[in-house]
Length: 92
Image (cartoon, rainbow, N blue to C red):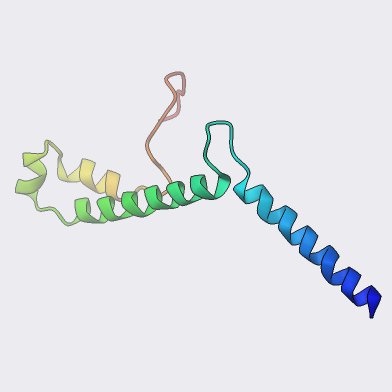
């Protein structure tokens, strides 16, 4: 019985340590969980924006200065691709 209780306590300590990893503050002041939530929110927003872009007609695209081809290209990008490139990044 005591061994079972000790095992349960050890599992709780291990789980608590894993949880602490997610709530530990990152260098810029937010927790890992907060950062993960922000990234997921950005991905959802990016996906919705690209879907909306794909539904615009040619006149609407012209109003915002995009061609059908450029809009199609942007809308087909994966949700995790922000389009950000470091200045020295030579990939296209």
